[in-house]
Image: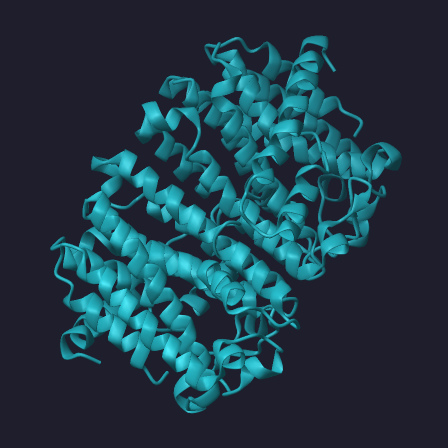
Length: 296
Length: 296
């Protein structure tokens, strides 16, 4: 990873890691629920979505502080989706990032409720971000777009399409559509939200939207490739786990070489869109190379 | 039920019944998800929360149209909570309102996701209500208060406390606190939201808040009484079902007569608070008598 990006990530990942549980600490709610919410928020992960938002803000030369609440709200939504995805009725996963999943520790009922609580609380959190006081109309736009990216026409719809796509062979377009909603919409929102907070022009927003969609695609293609040839210790999950689920993946549809070619093509497209945006693009460019080149 | 209230309820319940599924129809999301969301939205119920909001608006002489989107958003949140509560990991109910529960028809995974989708979509829906265009700051307040009433410090927290209160004897205060959050907060929000939309004074809001808390309490005491001596055909669920769950109820803690006395005391308190509000109180007063006197 590029040194400047590494410095940025290390600094702000620590900030996000510390800030996420701090919102929950003072809530007036049963301790078990706080613990279950906090457990998954503390389980780590790359914090890609919050860091995308902060890197975009930074690229427009705006203070990081303006985006912290919204960045944490997005991470809470991502975290709730992981808790629900891991449930026995869904992917039935016992571990995530090398630790027992939420329902393995707190039971299924509490895991469902911890997910519901994180999702709902994220909308409360947004309404306390700094932009709300000065520019309520902008804040409402950010609420609407977050709900869209996470809801039936975004992440939840993508998860349903993903489940329905199991045990049958998908076309590459179908696979891309599933991931576009399941993971791409919230990744894209993270970037767009940073740009909206920074009052980016309509033209810049449109290029960033296209960039974000390509970045989401890169993310998934690379994930699928790592599932075939990655190192299970670095990944924190067994290699080849997609295989056992009978899920279509880019390597299963295109072969490993085909998937790698697709990765290259979309890395190029992502950079083309990014280069059209009037901002300091250093971090987002380094991030694109990292997403396409990472080993875990 | 009072004739004026009956007329109001019949007219606007039909409107709410028709409007709720119409939001889902045009969503760009997999058909199965739409069906699962729509199934529970169409399962009926009394639509108490939307009607509370509309009756409050009407009492302040404001057009019903101003509150319809928000009323439907609240009903979506109530509906998601029922879908998740019925899951095998939670109450494990096979029927609700005489029909198979969501997971019995669509499976557990889809029921979890339909709940998640309804919850998330409700926040998208709020951002399209008429007040958003003219008064974004007011709309944001309504978003924040809805998230609070439904989240870890409101409904979800109450549900956790309810689960943790099973199989042990509660005090009357503990029982009241559980219901205050599990059902009271969203009922109270429905009334407060109507008053906020109607630009009620701080003083009126405070009295309405107290009224709403009393009304929520009435609702629950009466539910518990009906579970002991109601008619299972009218209730749409077996009488005595609370008994089997080892749950504390007002009749189990106070005896049936004690619970009925408590119902009378809080009916009086509710009316005292209501009478302090400067509005046409006819509908809310009739509703209070209905909640305390209903046979299902």
